[in-house]
Image: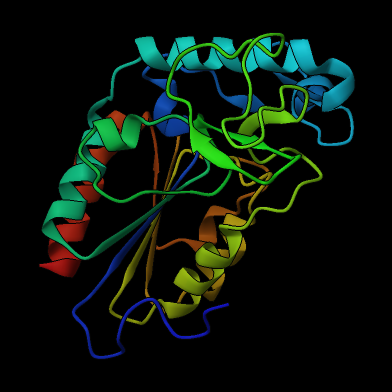
Length: 246
């Protein structure tokens, strides 16, 4: 496990962008809603729980096949493209709770997917993980390329009850933030990740963009708050970044 900072203490100002489902909502991808435990009308205990997925294997793969189809049809919006532009201009660390690839298609070269990727599959039998792409997965036919198991293969998404290995990257990145660095949080309710805590502990500037206020995010812990669609907020955030980062 790494214990050193993500970047040198004397390096130029860095930008950290942490995004949630709200950044992809304008591209037509439905957001996860915690109220009632539903995701796009599906019970998360059925489609996204490590303790129950084997009993619901067909429903699980059908659900994620649908997610892949939706992502395949979606296009990056102005907010995705803005983050890609920021990464090209400044030292930028992009972390997302999203499982789609719209940030990459919007121009980002490096993205940490905290909860996994739709394109990935993993086998709990042999531990093999691979990129399946955006096509369907049929649990009755398709098999793990490592051990040829079909019954042990699940989507490469972090289910409830599973460890999220990339959280260590998130914590390390946040701990590396200095006074001259900037934290931008876009499109998250604060229900899964305590983003208000991240902002309150940040020694530098913290910016928030959400469509509307959230009970889980007291906006007074941020230096600037933009309540509007992400594509509308992106150019306003960029103006602030130019002033702060040059």
